[in-house]
Length: 342
Image 1 (cartoon, rainbow, N blue to C red):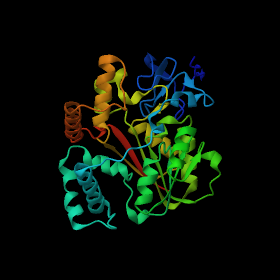
Image 2: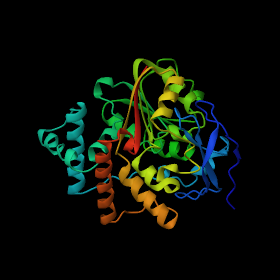
Image 3: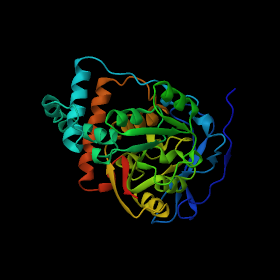
Image 4: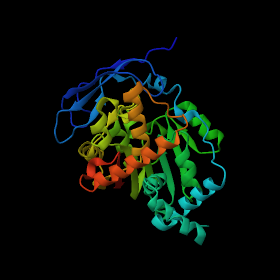
C-alpha cells in the first residue's frame, strides 16, 4: 500500500503575504502517480500573482512524491550519424553563441548554424548551459541537479561543477556516474560565503518550500559579481493560458510554487538581488504542449515514452507559434528565466 503524503494549509503567499484565491481543485498526479489530491491558490496581489499548492506537502513527506521520478534513470547516450550531427551542431552553436570554443572544429562551427533553423533548438541549447558564458568559468553549483545532466555538461565545458538535490536516489545515481553531488537542502550544506562563481536553478526553484530563502542562500554563497542563472515554468505562458488546469507544468504535488515575471521579480528582490534581468524562453514549449494535450485527452502523460514522429513535429510547430507570440507578448514563453548578479 502506497503511504499518503501529509500536507499543511498554505492560505497566504510566501512572497508578499497576501491571501490566495482558489484556482484549481482536486488535481491528481498526472505524471508519476504520487498519492493524494491537490489544489492551487493564486495570490490576490495583482503585483505578485504567485501560484502555489494549498494544502502543501510537508517537507518531511515530499520525498514520497519522487518515488518513481524520471531523474532516477541513467541518461542514455544517443548513437549513430544523426546523433553525431546533433552533437557537432550543439558544440558549434555553443562556440558561436557563447564562446565555448575549446576543441571545436570549423566543421562543427558550420554545423552550429543548424540550431538557428531547427525550431526551438537554439533555446534548448541556451538552457543546456543556463545562458552562462565561459568567461564566468569557475566553481558552479547546480541546485536541484536531479540526474546531474547539467553538472556533467558544465564540467565537460571546463567548469568546476557540483550538484545538489534532496532526492537521495537521484544523488546516488549521479554519484555512480562520478559526479560531485551534495544531498539535502542548500542551507544545510554549510557552504562558505562567496564560495561559488555561479549558482544555477534549472527548473528546481518551483520544487522548494521556501523559494525566497533558497535564493537568499544562493546569493550568500556567490562571490561578488557571481551569477545566478534560473529557469522555471512561466504561469503567463501561452500554453498555461490555453490548457489551464491541464497545463503540464502544474505537476502536482512536486511543483509547490509557480511564478510569473512579477512574482519572480519580487522573490529575487526579497532575497537581496538588485541587478538582474527577466525574460521568457520557448525552450520547453515542445514537451509542455505534448504533455498538456495528453493530460486534457486522457488524464495523464508518460514523460519516458518514445514520442511518435508526428507528435514531435507538431511539438516543434508549437515552439514556432510560441516564438511568434513572443514578438507581441514577451510573457508568452513557456520558461521564465532570471539572470542575476551578486
